[in-house]
View 1 (cartoon, rainbow, N blue to C red):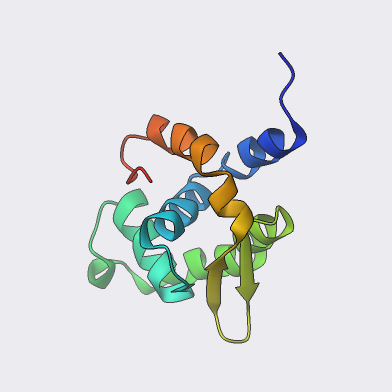
View 2: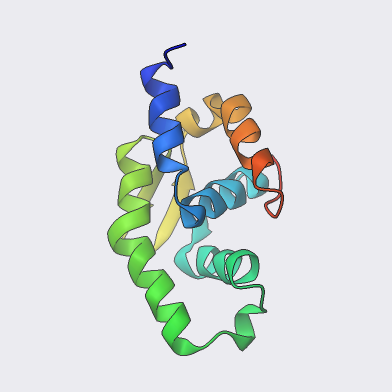
Length: 115
């Protein structure tokens, strides 16, 4: 069975755990989130610690990776709109349209909230 281009793109962007956490947070909150909000979600889910207890090095690395790698990839896929100047990430209508596929993908990662 061959996947659709949209499904293939969604599977590709969901390959990295940080991107899955970003998508889960945006889907769960149904609103724009700041880079700090997303960093805190990644620290909580991926590093199993409170955001206030994470080292500055970890926080800086996550924010750098979000800015340079993960958010541009999600934006290119049409799932988010990222405003680097305001450091805000907004879900797009396409993210809502991919809800059922995304729910299935995120459900496999049992540590993430399921939309």
